[in-house]
Image (cartoon, rainbow, N blue to C red; front, side):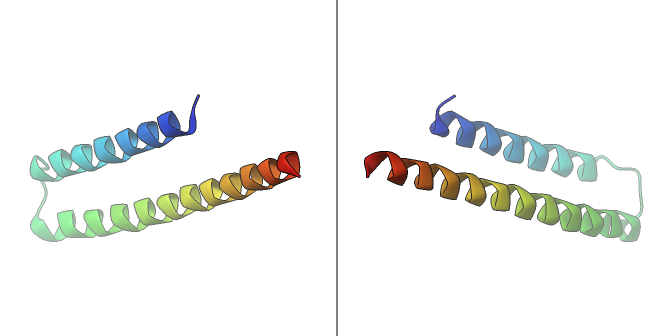
Length: 73
């Protein structure tokens, strides 16, 4: 899989998740207060997961950069 495809796949999952969350909120049979609390929890969880994914991606980029530099020297 090329690097570009990986980014497209991650982007598709993020967009799909956001659309799903928005639809779930719109059609949820809960009070506004409960929905806001649930949304806040979901946002905190999503933020943490995104942070972990970006850290892994950063590590992978550094690793590939090091490999590339080793092969060019």
